Structures are given as structure tokens and as C-alpha cells.
Length: 562
Image 1 (spheres, rainbow, N blue to C red):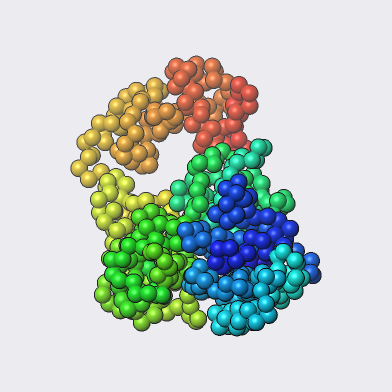
Image 2: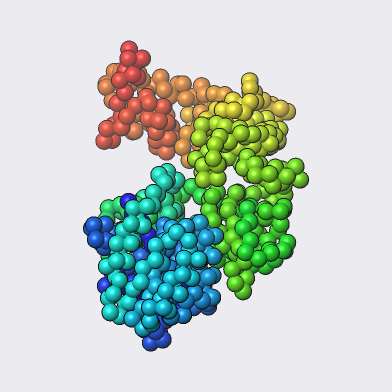
């Protein structure tokens, strides 16, 4: 089972040195990081466990200026490796990193007490006692990255940690939050991130959100090794042809098209580390994105986050709220909330009624991350759940569209959203092709009879010569009712003339077995363009098929002709 472990801890407590000792890889890749001796960006390395399994390790910066980078690295991980200097003990970022992990509900991990070669036994003992208070139940391992003491024991502890984690079977569509983008010769733009859900592989057609750009995956790698498909929980790098590096930034998400909400607002259940007042201006961390937002309190524990930029989110996601320090977090109840909620609805939300957050259709599966049992109080259709109020509003919207429709075609375009196939049959309309109509509704001229008769006479008077017409609803009405016959390029012919031309073609083909454009033109006494348009219409009607520069009757037409 693929798992990703993220480091956490204060600056200079030895996170990067420890990752290097465990994996053999230096995750400080930037020249500035090597010059200054501190981590600035996220680093990644594969960790081989004693039993042969492989974990992915995300190494995060410990400096207070880079906490937002730490949050980006922590989202999507399965467990933590908390690093504490045995001499210094827990410091400010130790505690803030732990708070962030708890807000993200990353509850399992191992504590590494580092630099034990530089302190005496009593000091290490005090640090270990403090660590047990900070992280009750976590295994604590004493290590020295410099001497190698405890490194093997730490690998075994991480193996036991991996054994204890059961990743739930996640059937949600593909979602990978981008935490890094760069260019490689021969590959183009490469994006990296932890695959939150689904799979990603060569040839997949996905979308970058919130920018809304459709992309194709050229190649996929897991820790520098090519794979056909990567699974949820793995660190993944994908190359995208036709995408420039500057067009993709951290915070974008690579997702299955249309599968996730892209929104300026999020309804959340708050978890506060310090009081978050109504109207507070904070940074909201969602996935690897962090955007300015205003907090609008709607109850004792609930709020709507009004974001300055759109983000990709789903029900059940955890978010982190930060000002100068981490203020709290939230559980996303609704990633696409209505702009205005009724008081009664918000009272239901306050009582923990998840159904009250459902308005427009969402997949029932997406709610299982919020629920312990069945979801009551909502409408169901196939895989979708939605509110009765929303369904009534949709019906009213469609009725209004029908009322405003042209009587020549008294219908309205049917919804094309993913839920349409399950939901539309619940509505009291008839579906005809791509439109919805009131039951029994028929087209009417409604005062345009004189105009229709004039148009019909103009076409009929042209005989075998085709007539150029405007593409409007009246023309389409006359065509649907058989009063004129449309040809290609906006031309039409009278119904009687079409029947005569058809009889001429059938007679000739019955006699000789075929007909050419020149022969048909001469027989009907019209020009080459008009004859060509008629023959193409006969082809479209299934009467003839073209063989070189000739046309022959199709089998069904031959049987009718005889």
C-alpha cells in the first residue's frame, strides 16, 4: 500500500540530515539551501524499509517564514516523522507543526530525538519525557544522523508505523495537488505532488484547476522510475506536453475533468486554536494552495470562507487557517455553498445535519467522509443527492425557459451536467433529443402563418432550383413539418420538387444501376451546384451511396424501388 510520510519540526533540529541518513538522498537541492544550510522548499526522497517496502518522504522547512510551505508538504501525507533536537527540546515550530498536523487529522507518526551524540543521558531523557507529553502514543526513537546511531531502529519504527496505517479504499476521482513544477529537456513541463485519490498514468486526459486547462499526461514517474499508472498515496511526477512551466504554479490541482468543485467560497466546521472573529482576514490553506480569505461566522462552530481566488476542494477536505500564526482549521462541508443561506438551514447545520449542506447535486459517495450512517433529508437519484428545494428551483427555471421559448419550437435545452441523466427523468417534462418540452407540446406558428406561407411559396416557385434561406426558427419549423426540404449550406427546395427529383433518381438507378452527377443534372434540368446538393441530401437520407464519381442505391432503397 503506497504511503507518504512528512517530516515536521523546528528549524535546525536535523530533519534534512535525518532524511539523508535514512534514504541516502539530500533533499536540499537549491544552491541557496546548500549555501545557507536551511531548507526553503519541499524535498522528496524514497525510503526503503527493511522488509523491502518503499515509503515516500516529504521533507519540509522548519523556519517560521516557511510555515505555508510546510502546510503544502503536509497535505496529503499519511503519517509524520516529528524531529526534535534532544538538546533543545520542543520549540515554537515544533508545536505549530504539530498543531497543523492535528488540524489536518494526520494522527499517526514517529518521533525522532536527534543529535543524541551531542548531549548526555539525562538531557535525552528529559527530551523524551517532553516528547511523550507532546505526542502521546507515538513511538520515540533516539538517533544521530552524524554517527548513524539509531537509524536502523528508526527504519524499523517507520515499518511498524506503516503496518498500523490502513488507507481507506478511496473511490473518488483523480486529484493531485501540484507542489512543484519545472522543465526537463525531452520531457517538457513536469509537475509533482502527492496523489490524493484515484490513479494517474500515461495518456490520461485531465484538467488543471482552477485555471481550467485541459492537459494530457505524456509520462508518469514515482521517485524517478517510469510507471504506467501511479496509485493514490504515492509521490508522482507527470510531464504535460504543450504546457509552459510558468503556466502552472503550486496550488493548482490535476483532476478528472468536472469531478471537483472550483469555488470562491467554502462552508466549513471550524476548529479553533485561538478565537476566530467574524470578518477575520486570514490565509486559507487548501491542498497546496494558500489564498487570502475573509471568515464569515454563521454559528458557534461553522463559517463560510470567502476566498480571494478560486480553489479546488471537496467535501471532507481539511483546511488550515493562518494569520501571523496558525489560528485553526476546518472541515469542508460544502465546497460550493449558495451565496445566501436561510436561517433555518443554518440552524440545521449548527446541529450537525450534513443534509442541510446539500443543495445542488453531489455524488452520495463524496459525503461518506462526513457521515457515520445514512443521509436523510435529501432527494436521491442514481449516484446523486440534492435538496428538494434545488429540484423545485430547477423545475421552475426550466418552466420559465419554456414560457419564453419561440412557439415554433416550445422547448428548452436540457441540462448537460454529469447528474442530468439521473435527475432530469424526475422532472415533469418530455425529452425530445437535446430539449425538454411540456407534455404534449407541439410547435405552432402563433401569428406567423402568413410569413410561413410566403416563404413556402417562394421556395416552391423555384422548382428544381434551390433557394438560399436564413437559418432561423421559422425555416427550421417548415423543415420539421415537411413543408420544405433543407439541403446543405443553408439551401432548401420545395417538398414537391424534392419528391420529383427523388423519383427521377430512383427510375434511373432502377434502369441502369447507377447515376452520375452530370446525368442527374440533365434529367432534372438544373445546375451542377443544385444537383450536387440534392445528391448529397439523398446520401444523407440513406437513399444512395457514393462510389467514386457515381452513386448507387443502398440495399433498402433498391428493395423499395422494385
